[in-house]
Length: 168
Image (cartoon, rainbow, N blue to C red):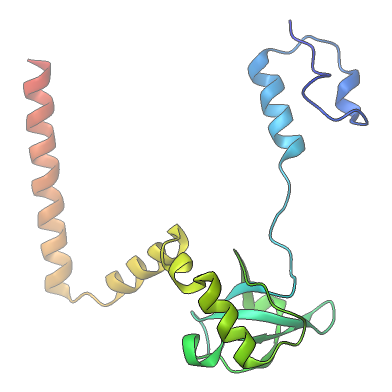
């Protein structure tokens, strides 16, 4: 079998395991061990507000108040979120960060958002696309939902016919 020592850091407890694991098992252990959490609450982290009057809007962490709250701002001209203290329970951390100083002014925050092209990065993410899709579906009328159902049926019928032709 394969040795695990070259796959893991030197101080890892897994390096003392006997070489009885397959290569796939070793790679999976390496993946689990090296996989780290990357979304930390930090100054400049872009967050999605998930509760309250600003629900569904993006904001940036400006300062950390304590272990339960942080100071966020939109910038207001871009996202519509005013500077406010908000609980961590009401926000979801994104992978995006903006390069700003602690307690940055609105003008410097807006400049950092434009410099980093943050809004375009967000709109290109799968998370934003999924939220937009949900919003679109929620706004459909009964007849629109019916048209979607008919289109799905037509699509599956065409796929089934093509698969039948390929098998024959």
